[in-house]
Structure formats: structure tokens, C-alpha cells
Image (spheres, rainbow, N blue to C red):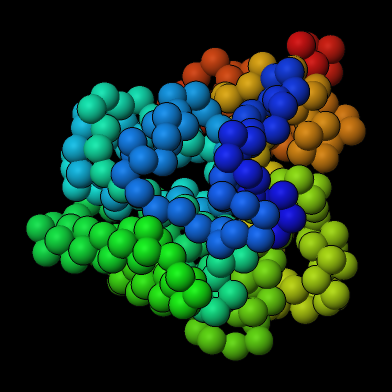
Length: 311
């Protein structure tokens, strides 16, 4: 995927005022394998970043030590090692931890072309991105990541295929852990729904309606609706609203953008309409959510006036 990797020292684009840093995967040279693995120390200080940011790549992290928390989007996950964590492109996360120890596996979507179904597994994992491991699960996961690290350091012409195979095993095993949502039944609907889910995660595409998603996928809105319903049990419109609301929450809690600017970022020309939409989806006004997060009671009342909402 274009722009997901960069040479060393160029992982971040300049950040516009009020927006979130976007980290890209550092690779040793143009055309290098879009993959990295190592300890927090080996990957570098940004692996422990204490400020909210996004990635253009996937991150699987095995935490073996430390105290504090890992914050993914709007949820704070307490550290009680060992844990296995997953962060997918577009999610916002940061660490509130001390003495953090463990290993990270970093890779872009491009690295999954041998096993495209792994993308669906990663999407299921993001629904429960913080997994407590028992001793057996930890030992097995640690050995597999150690193999990945050894193969990564070894290099060689055949190394990339081995890395892809080992990563596939890691993702499949993670998807088998208790509490992970089951995979949808295989079908044409699954393929369409998977592409839809991938699009919905990419806020930069600005696709805030079922029709816009359908046009980009080359299907009719009716077919997309049926495919997503068959594959996920949920409607496409519901998932679009959820993605839109989630993106708005990220901007409200993690940036200094005004409500009017947040509305524009998630496709609303009218801040008052955005305010009504946000209140309907969350039970809070944008300003109320910014003050209290998800902890406030869901009390419904009239939306703020546009002039206030834009402040």
C-alpha cells in the first residue's frame, strides 16, 4: 500500500495543527520487506509512545512485563502480563506504562498477500485487542515470535517466504484464543464484506454512506447490504454509522479540533446535523462527550445550537 513504509528516520509525516500523528513502518531500503520484529528497545522509543497516534501498519505486541495501561481508541487496558495485543491501521493508541517489556511484530497489509484471510482474522482480533495469556499460550507465542525474530535477522533470499509463513501461524493461533469472535461463513458475501470492512476502517477515504462504499466496491447498495448482513449479521448502514461515530470520538478526545472541524472530518457539512447524529448514536453531545468520554450517563436532550457546537 502506497505510503505505508519509509526509510529509517522518516516514520512520521508532519502533523497539522490539532490532528493525530500518523506513523509509517520504517524499512532499511526502498522495496524492502514491509515487516519488522523485535523487542521494544530494538524497535525504538516510538514503540512505547505515550501520545495518541495512528499507524499505517498492523502491530501485534506480546507484553511480558510492565505496569500501567495500553489505551486503544477509547478503551484503557490494564497491564497484567503476559498479554497479546493487536493494533490495526487507523486505530488510535498510546501507552501509559512503566518498565514495559516484550516484543512487537509490525507489518503492512501488503505483507499478507499469501494469506488474505488473515486480514479478516486481524479485524476480528481488533474487536478484542487485549488478550490475557496463560502459561502455555504465552510460551508458545513467545517461541513463535522468537523464530520470527531469528528469521528476520538472518535475512536471505528465502527469508521472506518463511516470515510470511510464521506470521500466518501467529495470526491463526491468535484467532483461536478464547473470546475471539468466530469467522463468518465463507462465501462471495464474505469477500465483499471483508473489502467493505477494510474500506470502513480507512477514514481518509471519506466514505460515509453505504452508496459511497458500494460504488467504490463496484456493487449495488442492495447487494452490499445483503452481503454484509449475511457475513456479519449486521447491516452495512449500522457499520458505517459505527465507523463514523468512532472516528468522531477519536477526534473529539485525541485532538483540539473544534466540533465544526470534527463534523467536517467525518463528512457533515452542517455541525448541527452532526450534533444530532452524534447524540443519537452516543446519548451525548460532542461537547459533553469531549468533557466526559464514555463514562457519562446517556441522557437525551436537545442538541446545542450550531454556534455553540462549532466552538
